[in-house]
Length: 425
Image (tube, rainbow, N blue to C red; front, side):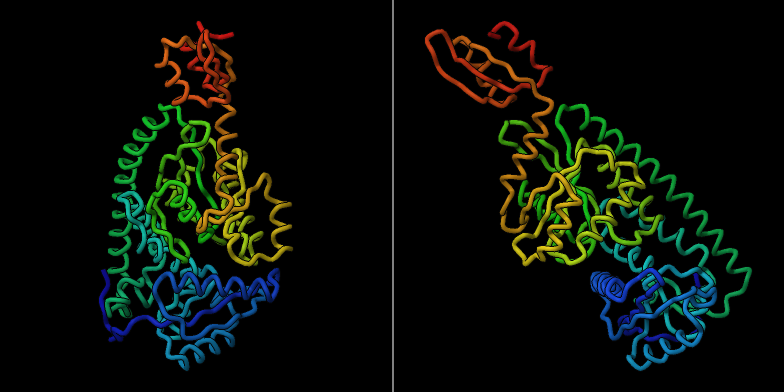
């Protein structure tokens, strides 16, 4: 799409990170946000050669930061021998172009980092289409940038000075056509997924969506409970595509558990839309398992960030059980007390060691039991088929073999009442 008119090195990307401290941020929160950006960049696969935090009292239209500060950052990035500057905030297209003109380096913002990670990790066809769409919508107003996106940069080309206005218009038209094509493809894929979901919902099995901040341990929890074999790494956004597995509960009920994409502070709205596939699982689930990394010092902030996204997609009213995870690690008692006050009901577990999982499963059984009706009946000895059915489909609370038959106390879905009507006491 672009001409390359300036030679660039094919060396791997080396990043210099710039955290942004706004008026409402404390020094501690600004440092924590920068540490999260460092984790994101590590997940992206790019080494970090230096970092700093820049205070922003009043954002400027040229660089977001003041001109003097921008020049200081340029000098420090050059001294660190970085070839990429990453700013932990949203840059306008004009600000991004100004930064690249000032520094002669590739400059990206937090959104582009997250887009790059999503592009690397999306596995299903729908997820890949969604990421392509989000990236094109992000890049459309940025076609005048000096640098193309990171895929071109990794390939060794990328500086695009000198393109004329006519070429820019051609590029824009091509991008718009690609966006329309992707939207049509996504519509077809979503129609197919809706059909599959309708089939699944036609079966009377309750569903629970595992949600939470990225790296809270959702996939590890799903793996422990269902042996799902989902990728579970100590990285942000280790898995993006929704995975659904069946778990058998102690009351002989089944539950469908779905692992969903992790949330994060400042999740770009284009990605909220792009990953509606996984977020829809939260919207349609009968209940939510909100997993929180209780060992993280900012666990309460993570809880609030997740609540903010759930509010955007209108699922905060869904029945929710808070799963305070990673209790195998050291936990600050003050953080834990705050969590337990803001997240109720809750259960403390370790998805890695299994500690507390039995209590979690009991909570899930209690949830599925809400749709069950208690029955007391006497089943003739000749009807062992019915006894077997009750063990398979219900929760047998008491069973005694007497002369007149099998005396049973059972919790069973109301829809099965006709099967036991003749034997009720």
